[in-house]
Image: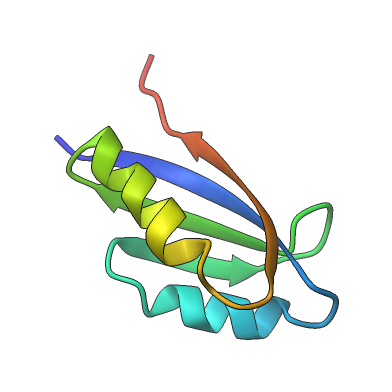
Length: 78
């Protein structure tokens, strides 16, 4: 069973499309769309474990140039 999450991303002004394009290239990212509203990009990601998800966010997603903030929202099935 995999761990899935939405990652809400804020970017520098005018960088949303570029950031979304770079995030799409990361293994484990299922979808990255630039959007309007309080966040600039919404990402859907999956990994095998919670630890692997954390590494994906911290080591890969947050290293993309132009990102100012991320919020990770793990998906739960209730």
